[in-house]
Length: 309
Image 1 (tube, rainbow, N blue to C red):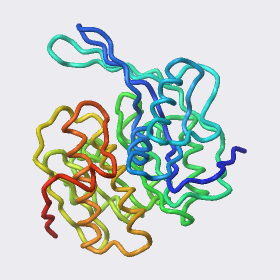
Image 2 (image 1 turned 180 degrees about the horizontal axis):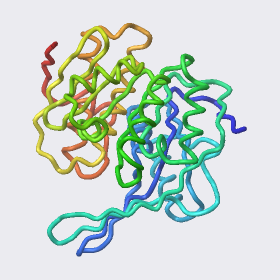
Image 3 (image 1 turned 135 degrees about the vertical axis):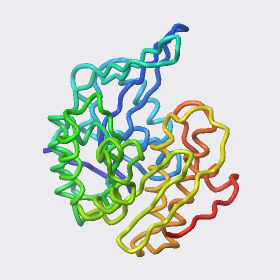
């Protein structure tokens, strides 16, 4: 059984992969994977962060590891395995449309931390793709009620079975989590026909303490059983939206760390949403998954005025 040593403040569990974009102009590669992006964003914010992932033994793994270490992410023991590193290839047509091809094998050693982090984060492909998804669930069962658990499904339909099966997998994990963050696109795919308010209510009823739905340029909604807060987006010139949702998630986790064990009052929700929205706005202003540093997050953008519902 794998043991996590010297537990950092946040442990992220999930895939790290190489994103490959092929266009008529050539091929561009950059490290990606939602959990790896979240870990990278946390480290950029100065949070001691460990990533438990599954990297092969090739040049892609070396490039991903260098990228993560450059921000200060600690790649946890058990994250290396024989074989190829996962890739996600997007082939762009001249009209800008894309065809996606995933080459991903996801598995983990059974993880049994001797000391748990303050916050454990997981989601994306890692929470759905077997055999690793079962081990992720076992880790959540082990950590439930012993640390704060955050979860972002970050739905990738091309890698999932039916929508009904994916929703069952999603809802099976919610009782073992404290915070669930998803995009409005995730919500629409998981719950076609349900209003945003009904989706929030359903996830809260499944057992989440806080549900956050990001809505791109329309801002985000943070909801507990007691309050719902709407945080508008910051108007930004958009370079691209790559990594914006992961940057939001990193800053949300950072805010939860700063907040500690205090209750999620409407004022606290406003503060969390404000900070995460700023992080996403900084990220979309520049190319690629390039999240802010703590200095950038604490400076700069105009104030946001949330409103309670």
